[in-house]
Image 1 (cartoon, rainbow, N blue to C red):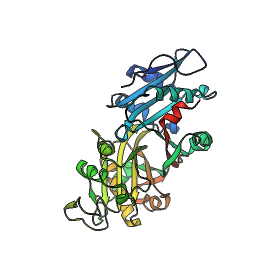
Image 2: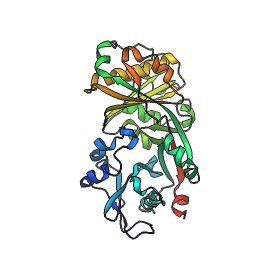
Image 3: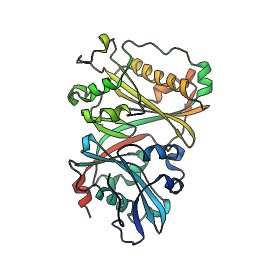
Image 4: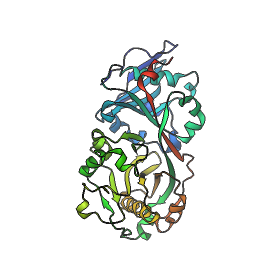
Length: 341
C-alpha cells in the first residue's frame, strides 16, 4: 500500500497529506455534514471502508485541521486507480486545494506497475458546477440516470403481494455466473454494457475476469438477477444468450437518514421484464429492512419515473425530492494527469 508522506504539492506550508485512520472518524465527518443531502454512505461505512482490502484512505490537514478526505483503490487488474468518497471542507473549496489534494494522492502511486488510468464517478450537480474543468483532463466513459423514491416499508410489508410477479427466465446469479460473465468478450454483452463498463455502486469496472469478485461484491455479495425472456436450460453459461437480455443487482446500506437501497439495471428487455426485476429487489428490501422507510435509487440508461409511478401501489412509493438524477463515470490518463501543472 502506498504511504503518504510529507506535505502536498501546495503553496502553503501548512497543508499535509496523511493516511486516514479509524481515529479520524469525527474529523472526517466534520468536513461536510450534508454530503448528498444526507444520502452519503460514509458516516456508517467509514470503518468498513478503511478496513477493506486494497483501499488506501487519505486525509488532508491544513493547519492541523482535517479539511479533506478521499480513498483510492486499484481495479481493472491494476490498470486503473479509482478514487471515491472525496470531499473538501466548504471553506477550503477555492484556490485549487482539492486539485492539489488529489494530485498528491495520485503521486503516492507513481511507479505502480501497469497503472494507466485514473477514474472516479460523480453526479449531475458536480458536473453542472465543475464539468468544464473536469472535462479538460477526464473523459466520460459511462453515465446512468438515477430515479429516486421513498418507500414506506412498514406499509408495503402489509400491502405488497407476498409473491413477486413471475417472469420466465428470471433467476439469481451466483459468484460463478458473474465470473463467467466478466470473462466474456465485451462485444458479446454490449446489449447489457454498451460502454464496456459494469458500473455498480459508482465503480466503473472493465469487463475482464480480474474484476469479477469486485463486481459480485467480495465478502458482501450483491443480489444479482438476470432474465432472457425465456428459461435457459439449467442456466447454461455456455449459451450465447448468457446471462440474458436484462441484468440487475441491488445492495443495501445505512445512511444518516436511515436505510438506502441502490438498484442497478442493465439491458434491453421489455417494460414487463424491467418491472419484474425491480419488483424482486423491492421484495428483498421489504423482507430485510428493519426501518419504517427507505430511500430507493434505481439507475438505468433512461429515466424510470413512469415505471416506478406505476408501482407506487402497493409498494407505497413517493418522490424523494433528491436533486441528484444522473451519475457520470470519468477516466483520465494517469501520466497526463500527474504531469499536468
